[in-house]
Image 1 (cartoon, rainbow, N blue to C red):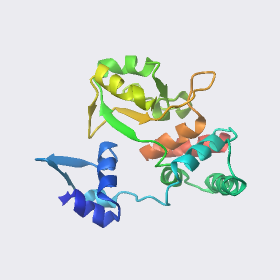
Image 2: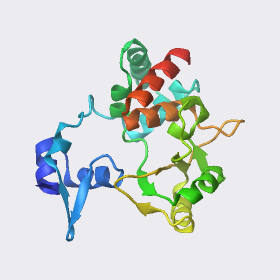
Image 3: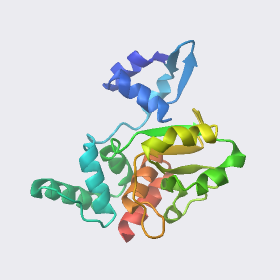
Image 4: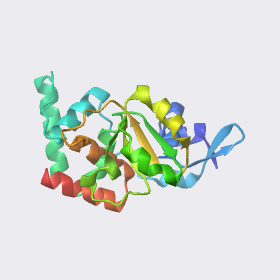
Length: 214
């Protein structure tokens, strides 16, 4: 069992980043007293393939993937993002690369809800459904909820539904204000990024299919 500090050193990331990954459910950790312990098997997880984009460039890239023209973008930055779009389309397995580039787009809370509350949570107007909960994902997600909530609404929503931090979450709340389309759906780029984060074979396959059909 590794301490957070030992895991951070082995992965060449900061201690703060490790705590963030634990909160997001991306590193499986066990509470031991007042500290976290991390099994060495977590070191074998797929590492990021590339450095992340900045939050601003992440959202510009999400707009491009969604067929939306980013605002106030310099020509050089647009050229670089266009190249990344092309690289994704040419990649036989684009999901890990997309997850690496967009991992700084927004904080995410990995939570657990009572199964009886999931339907109400899914229909709550404060949440813009995305990822596995978006109908374009084509995945059966009735036992899970994923979406975006404006940061100022997050605490109230978590309190109202008695959501708790969980090692095996069934709710993922991304903390960002998102403009839904006329049908109430999240931009396609966010759906792609969220599916890529899950890193499962079904989600990764769907990322490639949606990219090919966009």
